[in-house]
Length: 82
Image (cartoon, rainbow, N blue to C red; front, side):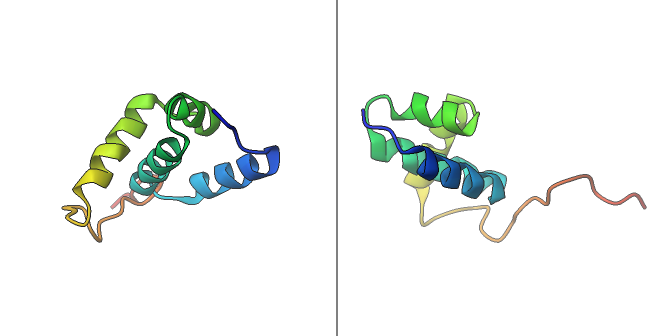
């Protein structure tokens, strides 16, 4: 399996960290799928995420364009206290 250059890896991680949780799963899944055999392990290490997260992203990608969570994005952090 071919891997990405250090510069590309750095850019990929920066993009990954800027995404919502759902988009992170899907982005990781696409990158793993592009790489083929061994891609899931490589991407899981690169993004410091679990392979199950990537599998879930693959399942979600298979369901598109139908997405029950469209328009719902969980905000980072804790909700303000009332």
